[in-house]
Length: 495
Image (tube, rainbow, N blue to C red):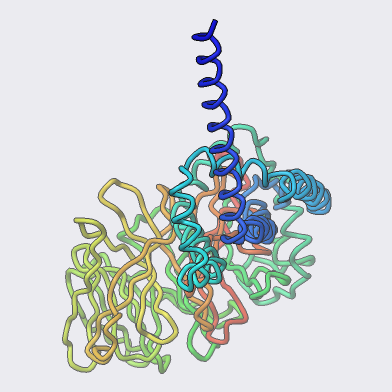
């Protein structure tokens, strides 16, 4: 009996000691959370997440499947906003500090010993610890920004997966709806004297376009996407591409093919800015204007290479017989082109060639054509082919003698990666908009997308464009107009 009483006493003391220790750890954990200002940290984290939701919803909305008229499928914006507000209010209530504090105390008390809690608490009560707590919001904001940048680099792959999945459930587009979309978007235009059809249209340029078997039209879209109208087609060259507006805005150069010809037969075309007086300049493709508007740089299949054409004398000068996709810099000092797949910059005056370092991982990408210079003539954007066979929109900071004082020059970054990106890029004169075209699985057509190269941004569809296959875009020198080629394949045999 005495032995039993002694054992019970020992057990009771042990239980009491355990309870006291657990209570002490809970007390220390609560004090530590106060010293860490955990209530404010939890509240700030929630508010940061809440503030980021509208931008995230807007980005996701831009990549929802679109109907044939360009409308986005999914919940209406107003309904989505109300739903998110209710959801966030519910989360704020259920995750308030009053309701989660006990869980945090238990978490810290179960994880650390009393001695460890005392040492950590001593740190947070010190000057260094108080400084750490005070700077914690700044660290949180910066870490969130770092995470967002990392996610933005992954978004091209996420977008590709999303659009492929959306294409499986999206109903097919109807070409009749495309016609209605274009007619509604384009004001009536006087096409008298323009080579849209043999006889002037009585309605609009767009109405006349649908009288052709497989029309391709130069379209004019305002920079804000609010105004759209057709300019012209070229009956002698039904397939057209690579439009380039002159620096003065009074002429358009492009390339085109006569019926039955292949790429080797592509010819340079020149017309007034209103689409009249089309002139064929002979073999050539992908024209690019000199800064003074007196010459064109271009590529040619026969004879092969990159050339310069004097518009007054029609004399041609060979620049590089192994070059392709030449583009003249806005300041007129350099040409950029692909030389056996490598990006090179050649000085117009001296002829000095500078091959650019474009290493991605342990390999060099293959540069294509129809690249675009930045307005300051110090960077290039183009579509490159990667070693895995995919294509990507790449922005390359150039290494040039006149920029040697800038230690940060050089280097390449990828903006969008996929297998169906068209090799044509347009850089807005403001410097903060780059437009490229890529296949949209959701719509079954090539569409124009844009992004801001000055920040980490996700490409979004260009507003106001026709729901057609769109390619080969360029900006006017004043940045007010985007010219592109719309393919109205209305016979139903092509996407």
